[in-house]
Image (cartoon, rainbow, N blue to C red; front, top):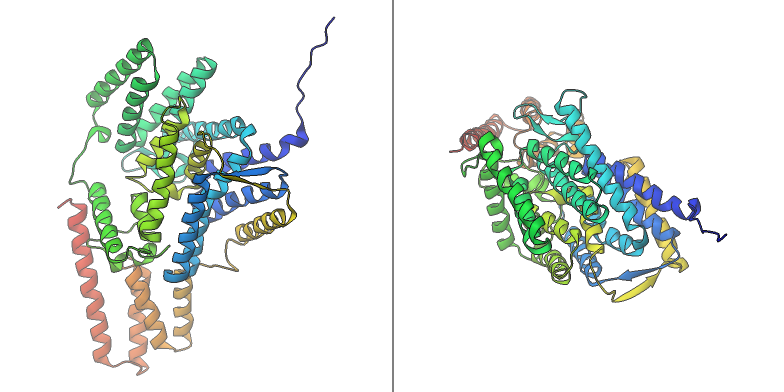
Length: 493
């Protein structure tokens, strides 16, 4: 009787990839790793892995271009950053891209594990979102109460929709490779969740990608079935009606996007080398805007790149995408369509501010055919030591929530103004508050504190009645103009 070999599960060899999968799952589930406390921990993973690995890492052209992008952002931080704390946070977000591309290139033998982790996270987001939508559980900001749009644990409807689109593409991949009927059911689940996010851009993008996939990758019968389903779905959507099929050029959300794009391009034209400077848009947008709005990131990643690092940073990122799409043009890979979905979606949104989207994009980039330019052996002690120290610093930043190294600069200025006011240092306190009010005009607590500060400074004889009145008039006039513009803007005029 012939003995058959049985593959055993090697826990020692699997502990690292298993841990990484858990981190990926939790990071995507936890608001998509949008905030610094989330993506900093995510960034520690590839450095810790490089410290443990004893293999060569292939350095591709895409990896070099992304490292160049980080270098440009570092220069932008040194030369133009007004608030180093905010700029440093944003630099670490950009560092996620080359770090994870190199990690996925080094760990290709576990690619199917990581893809399963992404799929499981997206499925859980959909499931929790549906439970919240049905009233079974409560998720903070999981549903937009006014419009009923699904946001789930991502807490932003449009990026939730992009995750659902990626889930549909993963389901299609697994169905085509395994022929298991549960995957079309998952695809329907993701499609329904995408619909109730109310994201028109993502829905239109889903139709476009499905049509392109059908025309280029499917056989005649399958192509006909998919195109028929898409046609009937489109008719059904128009019959149902609602927000998802209502498009108007006067809608506030669309107007806001167009105005921010325009302002961003004007600033870039004035300063093409480094734009406004990394991280500066968050608190200086009110100094440049042509209409009232308040957005942490511009709803167009390419313009955000121009703002953060100038023309060169945008060109480097576009070169990565163009190189990848050109290499993969003949590939029958679902990853090509995932890349296409993300790079098109970020024309209209700030999805690349979510660490989870960066992870999936870098993973898909790593799955495209590419010959490394050279390789770097991780087993060398200096490199492993550098990776270990970097991972330790990042974990410390995560644990401390930046409090000891790069605290919140705007909050610090406000606290400093309060202390200065208590110590009767009114002039520097007034100067700090005027800076804060320039950066954030709609903050009522800033306005109230500024008014009381002017009263105290006048009563102590630090400023004259005329100076106090002049500053109050300027603030009131500014507030009146902003409120008037804001009212017209919301009304779509």
